[in-house]
Length: 240
Image 1 (cartoon, rainbow, N blue to C red):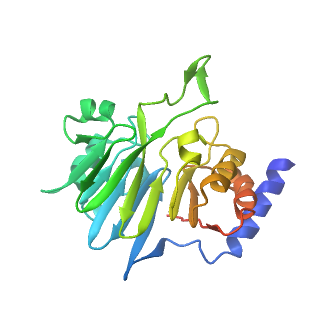
Image 2: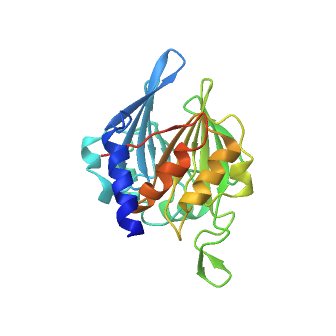
């Protein structure tokens, strides 16, 4: 019964929302950033003439039809985030790849950005934020995502800061973030955040816009009322 009620609430919210778009636009200075949801954790951001692919994975969409990447961000090595064949497909001369150390070992190219490190690529400042589990365990004492292995990323686009959380729970590092304008937060236990964790994180660092993703309809249905209850936060969804 609880699941059915949650799905009804989700459907009602979707039907009444003007933010459920195949491509969403966010003002970035005098330009717009276009956000396209490919599926699961895969995103395409287009801003100021740059195309940024986030965790591109072939099973989520037809990457042969998508624009080539100026910048590719890979959060960690799990197959729903890391697809070497797609990275090769969307790369072009001059494409930059930022990724974790394990992904660099598997891919054989790209620039490693470790937790807490910063760099600037394609004129875009990028910071790696720890992404890990505190509660979700593969087995006792073995988290699905150990601390130090995977990244979230913060992109600074002019005065707009975009946070891509990767696979993470509501960690102390996440809750301590400042001046985040746009946040992409995964909501799917046991691998990432519960709806309650996501709301806790949003209350802590107060992004101007939040996109829950890397989720299911049922988890989104439970998360949306909690997220929308946080004052001053614009909660948006994207669809393929």
